[in-house]
Length: 151
Image (cartoon, rainbow, N blue to C red; front, side):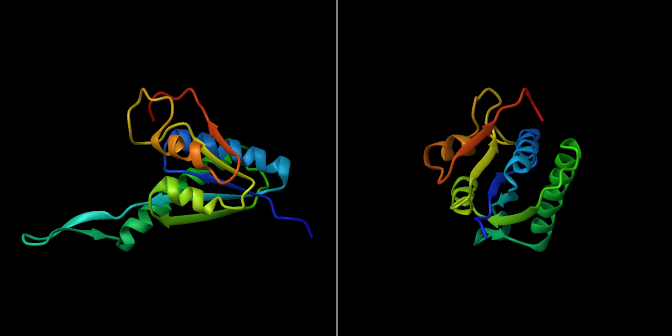
């Protein structure tokens, strides 16, 4: 039996991430590859008490919201791509996106991200995540550029 082909795609809910996922779905058809959709999250900080300040909150509501967002992007991308017959694995991982994506992409055939995401400055050519992983990706990296201005 041959090596399983795997394409890792980082998504966070923007139109740029959806475009990256659509591209990866189409690419997966050519390589008979599994598409691993990865969404990273950081804990939200909530007030604890006047003396302690803020503490991290990793409640089920946060994870449920991240899962809901991921499912919506996957469903929308599948529809846009014409519902290709591609195996999809969904991963939700706590951690900073650049480090988490690079860790998960170890041994993958390809890592795919959009050129920018929800944060940062609209005028940047690359977002902070794509910029960070462009220097240290453990596998071939594809940064999908789109004509999107704001989403």
